Length: 441
Ligand code: NAP
Ligand code: HSE
Figure 1 (cartoon, rainbow, N blue to C red):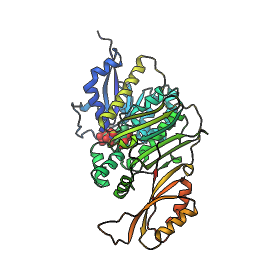
Figure 2 (figure 1 turned 90 degrees about the vertical axis):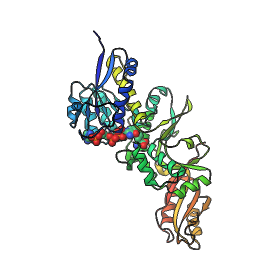
Figure 3 (figure 1 turned 180 degrees about the horizontal axis):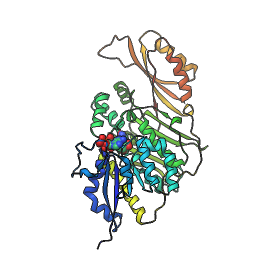
Figure 4 (figure 1 turned 45 degrees about the horizontal axis):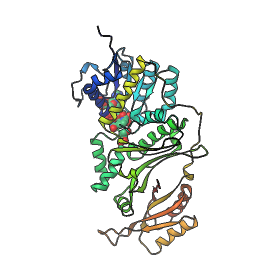
């Protein structure tokens, strides 16, 4: 008689990632079981969906009787030992995770929005119930960065993370650069490839990367961070002209997440499209790939690189967490999560963060326009390192033109004040577009 225990998985969500988890367990189940421990195997016993009749693109057939549209049924099912939350969003997902923890069922989730917005509440329940939440898939898809920060860097003070941590926006930027396709076409491709969020606005407005950056900062610095207190802009404003201009100057544009602890202990946390040198290693991170550069006091510089989104890579992280959750049933395992060793901490106000800048202005082409803009910049003591007005060869006599300024390093607050004045000039037709120029060393 076998004394092997099958742990039942309740899979909440059976879209891109959920079906990837099914496929991975189908394909590598035996191997996973051997690695989990001889006495344990994993089996999916219940699946939550919105539509039971939808055709599922899994490699093997899914018995219809294990599908449900009622999450209570999934959480309460006695065959479910571990709950995997892959529906996304912060409402139903919150209810499912909270109810699972209260039922003492460990949770695995890839939902960064949920943890960044409501993680403090959920980890409080997790601690109270001594029931873990695992979330490797929530940051950078297939890259094992959560366990790395929690375990491998546990003896380090982490100085900074510099990350390209949204696959969709990185894919869009690369496709616009390489193939010259427009932004909506590139976004549609990213959606078709299963990279984008159900609401792709989160990918392109920077908030998906911001959610991940909040999780990284919380792991490293141990205090809760209110998303309302961080500065986020996305790639929606990047135009082919910006890409061409960055190329001609030896830069590439990347959506960068910067998490950096200052000596005073305050943490700088921001997400913005940024010019980085085309010679920097992060410039070679293209398509759906992500990279997280970690600077830590003992380990020094490390770079973690891999697929940041998509079915297989994300399922790989979910399954890794499932194995860890399963091991916790049979072997003693420490409790994980955000490690709240500080009640509170300080974020650096965005006005005090300092870089050089690329500013694009939509100006009326008239005599004196450069001088009037330069006057305002001079008044605010902001130096200009270059200016350029790319001529539209299809319309050389255009009345409205793009004018770009490369500006020397100054605090963001100083730049913002100058730009408010510039925007009010008669010759300026819309809000200035600002990207950071990051000197990553
Ligand atoms: P998805 O393809 O949109 O799948 C969502 C699944 O959840 C679908 O099966 C849907 O059911 C089900 N669902 C949604 N809302 C529901 C509700 N209220 N009640 C019951 N079922 C519901 O999403 P995904 O790309 O797999 O992403 C899932 C999660 O993983 C998200 O939190 C996402 O941020 C995260 N994530 C995704 C990736 C990626 O590359 N895609 C990477 C890392 C993390 P139907 O199938 O019946 O519509
Ligand atoms: N939509 C996300 C991305 C999925 O494109 O990076 C991975 O978290």
